[in-house]
Image 1 (cartoon, rainbow, N blue to C red):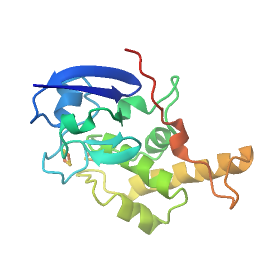
Image 2 (cartoon, rainbow, N blue to C red):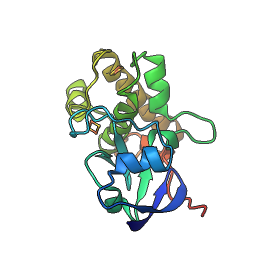
Image 3 (cartoon, rainbow, N blue to C red):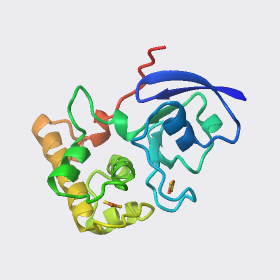
Amino acid sequence: MTRITVNVDGTKYSDEVEPRTLLVQYLRESLGKTGTVIGCDTSNCGACTVHLDGTSVKSCNMLAVQADGHEVTTIEGLAKNGELHPLQTAFHECHALQCGYCTPGMIMQSCDLLKNNPDPSEQEIREGLEGNLCRCTGYQNIVKAVQQAARQGKESGQQSGQGDADGNPVDLNEAEQTVGATS
Ligand code: FES
Ligand code: FES
């Protein structure tokens, strides 16, 4: 067993894990973060996507010990102070889900996409989500939801004057937490 210390959704956890434990297993089975789901276990579907230090990773594709000393954000850490992240709201309003199984991963990947490209074209959204599979809704409304969240980010950036010198929108990931260790 190996001891790891990881900050997950703003809380610091220190646990003994087997070296072979996948990050997704640790999140679900040790921490009860069942919002992060397993769709394939072979790094194909993206359902297990979380953020590691702000960048999306497939948590079935890395070991828990590799997250030692890092910050992980799951879908359960996106809402802040009872307010949904703009992407969560957009997925809801655009009916961008049916069974919802792919949704946590889709949202986490979309978050990373908009962080790196706040005003993506439809093609760029489709390419940015190509590692995430949806088996029931189809991608039309998922793309619409990401477009809506991007528009909102752009508008709020213009209204608040928080866009950059080029008039680019604010980073939607500002809603994402930073380290807030409690133990
Ligand atoms: S469960 Fe990780 S990519 Fe499918
Ligand atoms: S909504 Fe069912 S897999 Fe995407």
